[in-house]
Length: 420
Image (cartoon, rainbow, N blue to C red; front, side, top):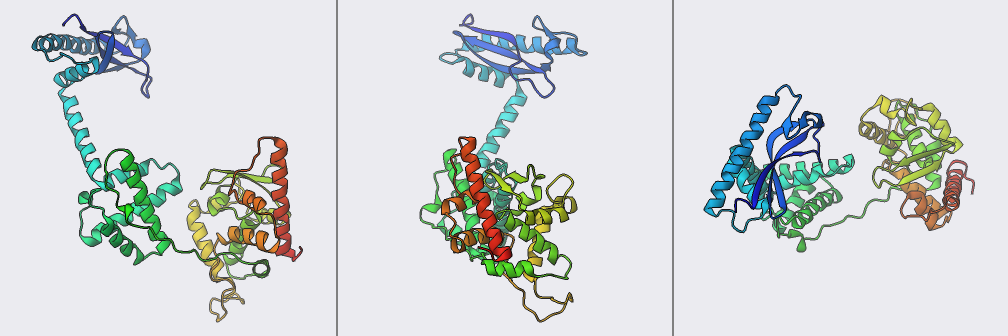
């Protein structure tokens, strides 16, 4: 048996560490099959020659560690083989036995990982945290984090320890109670989003074999019809003609108008948009990662010049690094336009459009294009990026861009000049 199992030194350079070092390992072979475990020694490729560490300030010490590991491993092989512990074992199984026997720290770390895995397997929030880290899109990660904090708030309110929240504990009744907790401070669609996040985590956990519990089989996530945020050409014409004397309102109106003229560009995409090239702005939408190319109309270009940035299309990020804070303030100013026609803070006038928001630019563009100009639905869908257009050739790509540019010009003419 002893002749069938061999232990040799192996310098592994397949995966170098951040410092460019390879790992010195013990290679166990049996019947042509091999497995390895580490010695704890790592050196640069140039510091390894003829199975020894060379040209290293601690070469004697490192070589002593390696040889001691090899001697102890061979001793264990003789003892274990004589006791029959390796009978029927593969090289990988033998390597694991030898590693456990020769490295107490490995045993401790292995037990620690096992406890962490057991905790993650049972604890919902522990697995949720792992799941959330895989969301590389900042916006998506933030949404999952919001749900995570909502769950912890719910546990605090009900007196439940988060460590006791297992997959099995989340039942249909738990989901119903959680939904009611969310509805105390949030709208139905926000509460439903939290529930969809929880459902996504359950689906991933089932795929990973962590649980068989699935409380959503008998629980239906509600959906509330969203309020129509679009405005007609006549309404927007009236809005864009308004001249505000209140600080911040005119800028809010300008930026909203620019979003509309750029076919309802998202706030975050506008804030991060690069300088125009050849009269067009091109960006990849953060939400869908689709590439957009929009012709910069003269009316839009005039607004860009007023708020031009040094590196970006606009100076929004230069003035407010957290663009979300900027657009929250912009949304508030949009809603108040018309309340103070004289520029004074106190007035009995009503806001022009108290329900307006930056997202209204996108929905209004689509509604006007379809209902007032009868622009083909496929052109509208292409402009909004709702479906994939066949752009396998430059000719087709140019044709679609021309259709979208023409549609945007027609929408702008109707809204700004009442010209059909």
